Each structure stands twice: as C-alpha cells, then as structure tokens.
Amino acid sequence: STILSQSDFVDKNSLSYPFEERGLQFGDGVYEVIRIYNGEYYLLTEHVNRLFRSAEAIKINIPYHKEKMTELLYQLLEKNNMHTDGKVYLQITRGSAPRDHAFPHEVTPNIYAYLQDLPRNEKLLENGVKTISQRDVRWENCYIKSLNLLPNVLAKQTAKENDCYEAILHRDGVVTECSSSNIYLVKDGKVYTHPATNNILHGCVRMAIERFLKDENIPLIEEAFQLEDIQYADEMFLSSSTSEVLPVTQVDRVVIGNGEPGKITRTLQKAYEQDAK
Ligand code: PDD
Image (cartoon, rainbow, N blue to C red):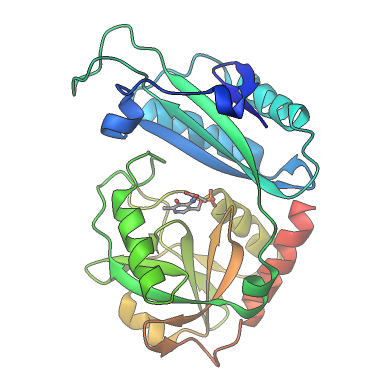
C-alpha cells in the first residue's frame, strides 16, 4: 500500500527512519488517528485543527498549511483506492538529528501517514465493555496529542490483563479520561464529563457528542465526576475515533445501572451513526 511521507507518496515498505530520530529517542512529536467510513474521513477538520494545535504547543513548525495537509490526506485515500471503513495514523516528529535534548539547529519535521482497515466493532457497540480504574500518572499537558504514550500504554495493558477494554484514569479520585478515549457519566438525565482543560485530550468525538446532546436537548455538564460517583451512575460510556460511542457496563466491581447499555448512550450511538454517514 501507499503511504504519505513528507509531501510525497511512497510504497509502505520503502520508508525507513534513521536511528537518531527524535520521535523514537524522545517521543518528540505529535500524532492523530482519524476515522474513515466508506472511504470518507469523519471529523477531518477537527483532527487537522488539533494536529496543528498540538504541533504548535511543542514548537514544531508544520511545513504546510492546514489546507495542504487536508489535500494530502485526501490524495492518500485516492492513491490507496480506499472505499471501506478504516483509519489513518498521521505522525509528525521534530525530525532526525544527532541526539541532544534541546532542539537541534536546522532540523526539519518528519511526517508520515498511512491507512489501515478498521471494521466497526458491532458486538462491543451493542453489548458494552468492562473497565478498570487506575491512577492518572501523566503530565500536565494531556491536551497535546504527543507521542509520549508510556503511561497510556501501561494503563491499557493493565486493563487488558484484567479482561477489561479500557482503563478509566483518575487524579486523586477525580476522573479525567481513559487511556485512549474520553469518558462520560449519566445521572438523572444529565451527561457529566471532565471539562476540556489541559488534563484531558479534547476528543474530536467528544466535540461531536457535545453537538448531538445539544440537538437532543440533553444537558451536558462539563464538570469532573469522582470515582465514588460511579456507583450511583445510571449510564456510562466512552468515546474515541476508533471506539465511537461505546457503552461502559462495568467499572472495577461496580455494575453500571442494570448492566445494559443505557438510553442516552443509545441515543448518542444513533446520532453518531447518522452524523458519520
Ligand atoms: N486516541 N483521550 C485520549 C488519551 C486519546 O488518546 C484519544 C484518542 C481520545 C479520543 O479522541 P478522539 O475522539 O479525537 O479520537 C481521548 C486515539 C484513537 C489513539 O490514540 O489511538
């Protein structure tokens, strides 16, 4: 398959990186995961905006404008003749140069993007998932979609080892988000989620959910909830580009509601499907 490298298109097997690559040595870069349905990007503008915001936050100068980046991403779909459901992984690092913590002079960003098939996980969307709570040990700039994912990787692995789909992260009992998704709690017809501060990634699906809730006249309360609130939740769900709107039916030993995906969760799943069409 063909991948985007710098502003060129090359065969996937022909791309290699120098060992002194800052993305590898320092995690010095940013990335995006963008969902594709029927060969069309979903929430592309939101993702491109966030990519540029992340790059700017760590002082990486992307060598093109948003319009050019968008155009290159569309070309990537065309070159691969993509017509199914999938995702694109897009990565920008500060570049390759002799190892030095400080930014090297005259380093130029390395950019690549590639497509992968990703069928919708109908079974999980229908039945929901179990989760485990864990301490959020990440830094104070989680709004940057950076390549430094070790805490996320370790949290997700612990979840997996405990037969769970996701790790729900908390700082001193305050629930922030999950290892690779945003998290929501429904109580008395209102949806609660952590405000879009530096402590969470501002999810593109989270933005879409805000819009769906407005359309449905369901209040969204952007106030963090606590681990101890979970036992009283009517419903819970998580969101990401790969997981969509996914019901959460259990957190640690606590079964949410009656253990079935809730009504507001179902409403949002329907709204998502309509929007992604
Ligand atoms: N993860 N929070 C974190 C920590 C994430 O890594 C992600 C996305 C989200 C949801 O963001 P969005 O709605 O824009 O996908 C929230 C992607 C899918 C990943 O790393 O694979």
